[in-house]
Image (cartoon, rainbow, N blue to C red; front, top):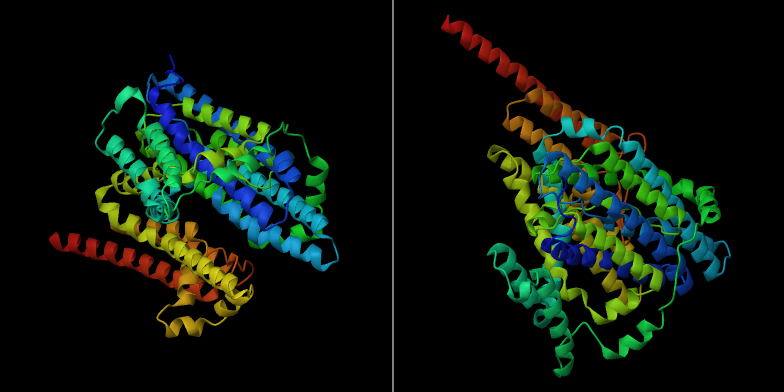
Length: 543
């Protein structure tokens, strides 16, 4: 018999997952409206309903999958895989696909409205193709999981969690201390100390309620920083209406056949599709380490179908199995939190509530839950692996931290350009690595370590885990894979721009890194041969 679909912990899990997904919705509104020039009718009438539909598809399936596993095993503690819009793809598709497409259309004489339409259609194509790659990955996912040490899969997630999730939300918490620190204290008390709060209200709900109350309370304090404003409520509610998702197949076909789409296929779309497959595999391994083993093929298939559905109904943004399963499990969530999340975002999109919710409930009130998720994922990478593999996990953190460093650098230069009213400032500065070297920052090394960080983390953590186990042949094979990836530019090659990483994928794109990996592979193989020879010689001497 399957577990109960809804338990008390599902409310906490829902708050955390909903806050995370709501952040993606707010980013879409901000970036698509402010950067790409999408009008309100396109955003509320096509993009967000398509995104919500894709979220519903995945959330309902993964909730069903959790109930199915519970029924098969007789356990009542199975947690559904978290699922939502892929944050990395969101930024990549806005700045590396749709913005260049819009600028190209403008330079060809299109008016701003038509240029935004071109960008949207090419974004639909990118999302669809990413989903197709994810579907293809379902066929090889099990083999990848069997061939890769757990330390390598979990280390990548820990790197992302500590850099792109935990640090970011910690910074934002201390930016708004009057609003965000108490919710953080509530979350830590509830989940570190295991304290049940009054009225049987989950800690996540208390955090959001208290954070929201503090946010509105600070509006009464002269000079206090607050993330909410009474003046923003009326305009936010003007967007309310009924926005039913409708197929946009003709627009999707126009994007797939547009000449610009082929230009973005190799440098952006294929790498993002591969990274999404890899990230999903890592999250499945994370779930298994927490006690919930879900089958790989159907999990990846529905993940890919979610992106295909998104593109078919107007969203440019792929969906993914989310990082954070151990965190949701620690909250006591089961399958109900996934259902609640899907229903919530369906209602939000259908009624155009995104602006209104953001105006009333600030992100700062609930982001402590997401910070907690980042903490748990980082801890799990060390706790769920063999203790001897801890150094391999630690080494695997470096590429993701470098990726975060690149993000901070580009954001800083972008802010400087805005102040100077010089929007080419960041690219001009980035084109002068010697200037950074003179200031003590090795920009070329930072760039190389950050490019394709999910893959390079996997390579180095996996090889290190095998070296710790004295499995030199397997470590050499990981280095050979790294050599191939570097040679074709999937890792290390390329550059950074004001918009982020720009890959240089093609024949002999990264020969120097490929040679370095090859030399390591040869050394590991020779070391293995020497160890076997020395062992055989010692054994022979004993006779």
